[in-house]
Length: 504
Image (tube, rainbow, N blue to C red; front, side, top):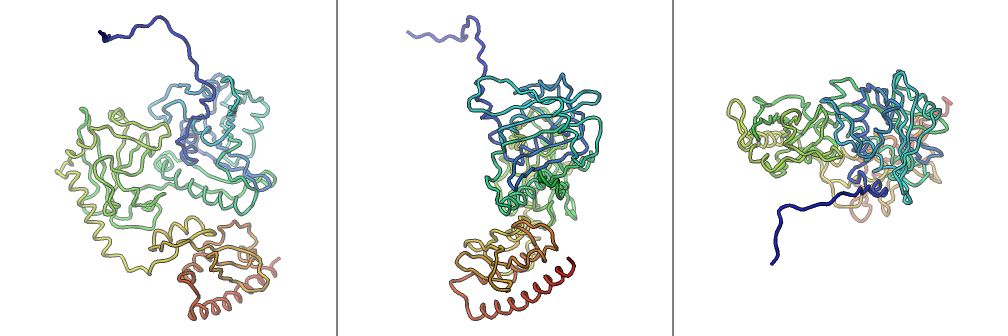
């Protein structure tokens, strides 16, 4: 007869260190945006006022990435703890760090080599490097020579300088394009920088405003130096232009003896502002916004309160999970999502404002605001072909958001050499509106341009001529329009080129 024992006996213990190959699995749920946000957390915790994200390219190929700050730096006696996998430091109530894995997990999710070079006030520079290696047998971390650490820290980062600061360097970044084609690299950088500005501006919008922290992104050519700086502007999802009468309201939900405060807001209408549109689109961003110590952790979704609904995309609820409420929610290691416990949704159903307003009242008010806003919208033009290559990400996003799109292959606007002086060429087979490269420098005013250059010109051409690619062939009216556009735009391009050349 089998017997069940309540306790499991033991007779000693054996140490079982992790396989060094476990480093390869760290941070696999990170995207580039969330990984860099985790590094920005560390800079903010270090008291930095200025943070730089820099892409480095050499001979057009992207070869590395830096995150640089002017914070307190890391003292020599603390650098090994900072680089220990799962190392725990003492967190204060204001710190954004939480798990002791952020720096390493975020970095290893994106790069095969992580170097940290730092100087605390009154201390010598110090540096360490981790490298992912399939043949790694130990957890040995490389020591970077003091002279090299100092040289990296003291480079001209164009940040307000001080006695301290930290440089985080990624080499062998796995998400970079494996090409030295300038147009492909420029397109990658254009899209990536735009996405980063959106993600960091949303994630840290309170901190950028309340603490005066500045974040900038740039690209350094290893031979020519750094280029244009792209500041990260705060994107506050609750910064609507006008309020609805009676809103916002605070509803309080009792959970486990504490009160969760739901700060319920309703946008009065749809908007073209970044604050309404948000990365990913407004409809996906309806719902709950969880903050911890001023940092946005989770933007959108209803956590079981309600199913996503187009009619609720004006509804956004702000929840701070600091203090007494912290234990009710689970934050993932990437700090990109918060999960509420099973008692959360039922408790929210009982939540009330001081005037008796319930969550049901709130959702009904948000639906009513959506219906009213839709009645005010003017009619749009008929459906359009979606934008493809050659469009600036912001322009492409605006087109997709503002126009109903056909389920067809996208139309591209790109440059190539012509054998004539014509400005335009319509290629229906590849669905490409070609522009004559001989006019490009004149239209750019001599500036360097990537594949997504001249966004105003390309947007106008899309609105003017995009429907030419619809249907199976050119009609007589299409041909007449193309001849007209060709004559006028070619004359304008020639005039622009002559003016440009006269200035040289």
